[in-house]
Length: 511
Image (cartoon, rainbow, N blue to C red; front, top):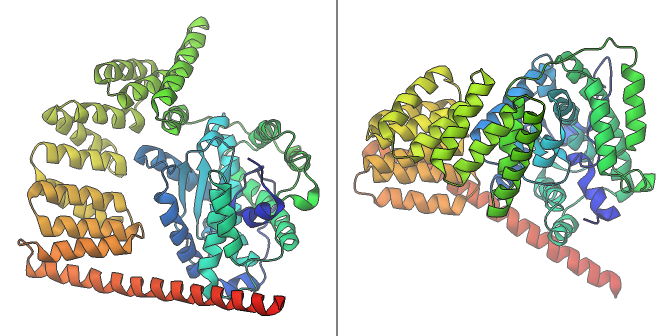
């Protein structure tokens, strides 16, 4: 895809699309007052949440609980020794994956970090993946977005969000992205580019510190950078320096090598689940009929190579099992999963999740419930296993137990719209119409769909089984959503007035 200089300016550092990586620094760089004054940490988080609404509604967002858990546990390991990266607002970082064939990762304001599926597949080791995530954590820790828009006001959040979303849209719809970007407010192109290059170098320094303290191998960054350089050959390093948002790959590789050459080699053993995670992402990257056929062929080729070396490829066996499950070939999926488990010799939430998916799809409710009870005992904090446990309870007509369990979960994870959808399913199975639609309204509100959420509340209010307490909850949520809806309308009207004013000024200027 051809990216113009203007598009690059709007992409800025929100996407480390060219070359995410890291370098070393003893201390986190000091920040000026500009970013703190003009975009507070709380407003930064709000902006990030607004952008995430659009991302979660995108069909390329990988909504897979097991993969999300792995990524977020992985990110938590990086942050364990650098809690200061969470900032004054104590950001609760969230890591997620999107389907995309470009090697890319990006940081959003407020602690949201996205990774393209192709980058996950390109990262051969956990240290390589950690180098990317650590770099993006560096962007968030240094509040680069707040510093970028230091001269703007907090009431400019909507145009800023449009600018950032434009960068993300570039991968699939460049025309729409450009229209979005042009409608947003930003700095002059060169100032943005200059800032972005400095931000990348700063994120490199902070990122390497995070990477090293997290126990990962810094030399993995060099290998990954070299792979990134090869994939982008003829693009990033040949582009004039003043049209790049990121420093040259060759410059950054040299910088990293010079910073780590005096360090003692640190071997990092990948967790046994890393390759299972990559295998699952490979399947989820393209679940079309042809995509699954291509993925199946890839895993079969991997097994053939492993057999020639008289070894086992557990991830390939697991990948084939997951492909078979996606194709609804449950007997084959079970056989391949059993094979992968036998070869592995270790327990994994990836194995358990797929096992439960197979038995839940195979009309074996009691078997599924027995397996889910054992699984929830082994993985009590797993959202994916928790949802499957609730599904198994519902399948066995134990709806009240499912409701009790899910309500407890929603109290702990208030912003998990998936839990609200699961709770709505449980209420529907129990025949509780009012609470079913209330839960649907909660789920829709968490995704930013305010108008449909209000519609669900209207249905909930008309439901004949609603109690006084139910109506009190409906009223409270409705007041909150109507206030949010009013604010959105006012913001929309303000933007329309500003556009009309700009058009009028442009007409007067051309007269």
